[in-house]
Image (cartoon, rainbow, N blue to C red):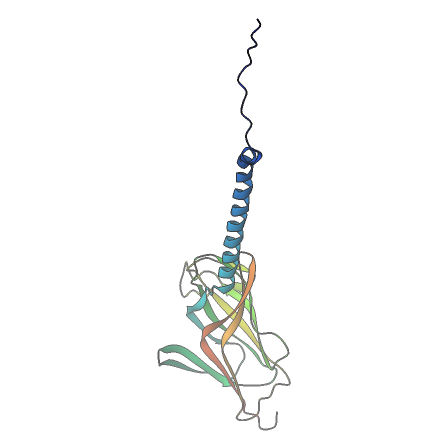
Length: 211
């Protein structure tokens, strides 16, 4: 009589059970992708909504071959600032400056500033002072080029103002502004902000026949 001895066989597992270990990594990858996508969306929304620029402590008077400037400091209703008034002449140019501070938690790059275009009065950023952190009050301006502004840092900006040769400067008319458009980048995304300068520039017309 012959006796056959067979080694014990591995029990056959159901197909669903056998494939389960291979499905877990796929689900984990899907979950990780969803989490990363949500983080990316939240990050983009945060970048698009932060407003890091604020008025800095330094102000600079009007420069150039302009008529006499009248300067008046304002401190009322919780607002402090300065009003600089001068007569408006078609074709005139002059400069004035202000400072900006990065109140955010990340560095930004100042790309440009000013309100150029087809209008009676336009402003262009021509110089910058990057030494305010090292020596507050130092009027060390140089030609403007895009620059990095770290968290808490302050820089001075010098604007060139141009009045169109055909601008209306009739007696009783006036043009004024106290903000400047500033273009900057944060994490490679370009943003635009209207930044108060702490100074109101007021151009007053005196010519009764120019309009």
